[in-house]
Length: 271
Image 1 (tube, rainbow, N blue to C red):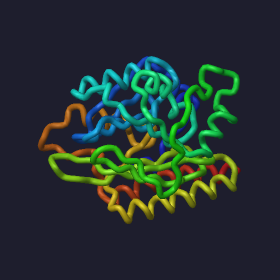
Image 2: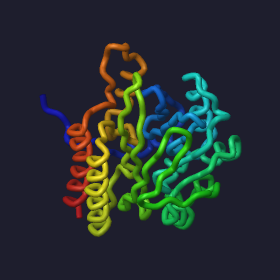
Image 3: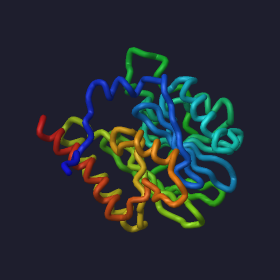
Image 4: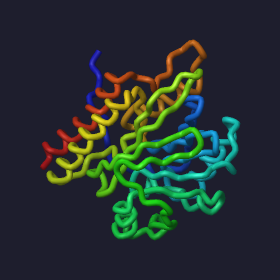
């Protein structure tokens, strides 16, 4: 069977990032919830001391309500949200953080470089409702760790998609088994040759760290990269005897990262 080697990204894909008419979610591990609209994901990580939200979809109350509703539906408590951790300073990831901070006083985390980027270079320059609208409490950098209860998020600087983009590795559990999950922070490669080179170096670096930590789970913050909607739908109906579709092994993770190389090659062809 012939299979795609890279996702197909069109103008419709970009437009769908702002479509807040549809949300879905699934508990994909015992302690990890995914919440998504048509093109963008966020994750909620459950710890023994509360909840960590990783990325926040889009700056609107509909996204906030969808995240809170999903947390309640899986039996967790929104008032236990303690931290909001951001991969990078794009509006579809900084998202509805204002509502999360205001409602739960969550401590916020991002790189200093991308906090400046978020404020100085908004993705939607003519739309003030998408501009930076809350503060970052903790600037994190390569080699830092973010801890809460029994969970540790390892932080890696992976610039390219944005100047100060971050990627994360952390553990999740299923049936008392512990696995390492990785979230590559910036899906779409940049347009210029120097930035593409930076992006590919970041990808090599992150793959090396993932190899060292025996990562077997690929997480994406955009559904178009990993058949995200289909994976969520599968997870919603998965029987106890069926495999976890997110658990792809170390070789599977390496193959997943090749998707981003292929996207880079495509960009290079257009330069």
